Length: 394
Image 1 (cartoon, helix red, strand yellow):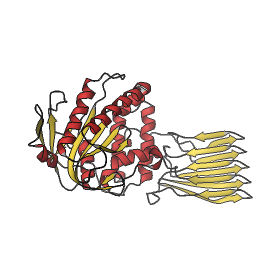
Image 2 (cartoon, rainbow, N blue to C red; image 1 turned 45 degrees about the horizontal axis):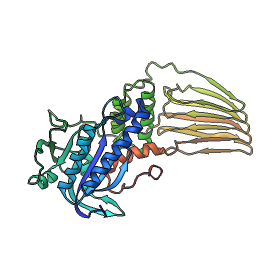
Image 3 (spheres, rainbow, N blue to C red; image 1 turned 45 degrees about the vertical axis):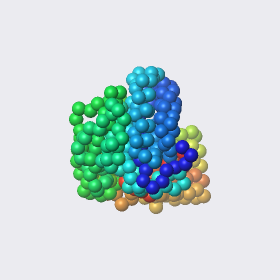
């Protein structure tokens, strides 16, 4: 297609089901499979006159000037995907969603409620399916190809959208079938303090660590990541970690001593925070990462002696650092509260001691582009203003 359609367009969104599990278990095979997947999707879209306006990971976003063209692209892609042999242990299956509406086209991208609705519709599709909104179904009712039908699945309240959507499933011999309509997710408590991006990032880090430790299956990880990155309150996040961390039976060390002449000494992952730490740093670095730490005592007192090295604390919302009692000769002390500093205080860290020419730094985690990409994919439909991929993932 020579250019992007404008005005009322039909949008096709696609996504590979279970890709996280395949990437984790079969990285090389998955890389080859995704190259084939991308060729099939792009060719089917372009052959039907469509315009690919965005890709993110294994997801495609395309626009068409007519609903029939969007359906033709989806059917052609699903037919080729189902007939293809794959280097992975199981076939690549793709979920798809079609919706039509008025969009604003600017600089090759699309904006507006129609984009939000098709993205939310995609989240209730299963692998191998093509789901169609009520508006798109009306446009397609008199121009369905031979052997293709629309099965009504009922009305569903899609996340963050005020108007419920009547959903249809495209039926064809080569498409996956569904025996039951899409079920609504279990309601999650929405009252309580709002979650910040830092809160969501911290939970994501814990979930990824739990998956690498074997405490979560790839499917569990996929499901919890989606909830974590779209959570609105701290109450939404709490159940995701309920079976992963427990401090009730943790024995809190009374005192821990760390000596680091050169090189690096660190505490990270699910380490138990003691009541007191004595830290001596020569020319090296001591790094205390509290993002996944098990906190069972309300106060941590750190007595430190830093020569020319660095004592670094990576904090999270709910952790307050006080370094007013540190005496500095020619070095520096810098404390930057993490985003979400209005959270209830979980731990107070009181640092005292001396710094010669070195430094003491306490701050929240640096920006994580991988998390930002997930957040864009999963949360963009709820906010028209978030339209561009994170810069580092383009």
